[in-house]
Image 1: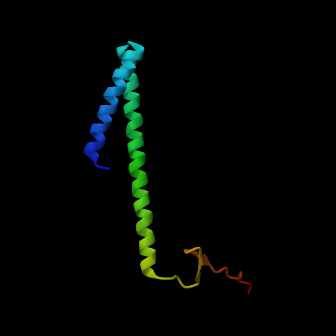
Image 2: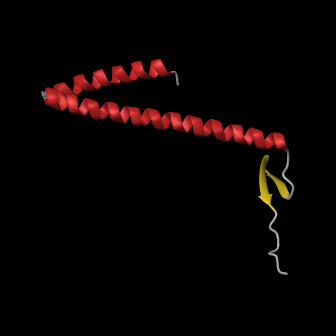
Image 3: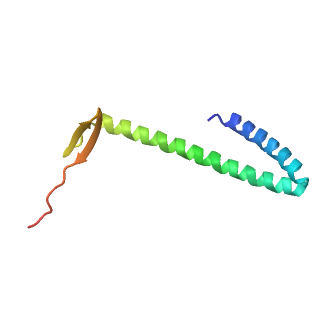
Length: 96
């Protein structure tokens, strides 16, 4: 997500929203308040979108890091339909 493009798009959206709100309400104060609320909601959505992209990238990097390490001792690999599923071996509880 290219930041300047997102901000210009958000500004355009807010202008269209403000014009539509003004024609619906015929009130400048209502238009201003609702446009500010819309701007806050757009910022929250943008922030959540960035958080999701960072989380997804971190998850994929962690998967690549785990692939580079090789199999973990005590871990079995089971292939089902071409997908690898890892299961840790269950150990017996320690009873002295």
